[in-house]
Image (tube, rainbow, N blue to C red):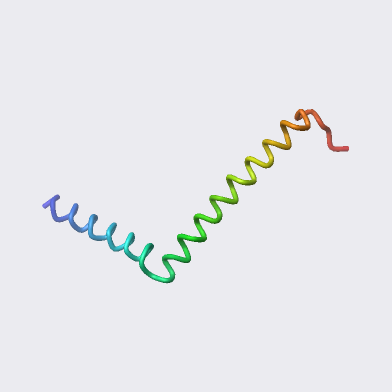
Length: 61
């Protein structure tokens, strides 16, 4: 009984991966996700670099 549940879950996972990588809407979603993750890494590095350069002890007046 549990084998059929695992098979259904595996089929669903494969369908989701297939839709993500081989359809137009899936590829655009994948590209959007990668772009947002890239932007997050860029901004985190940018802000940490700015904090390091200023010493982190500046005050907003």
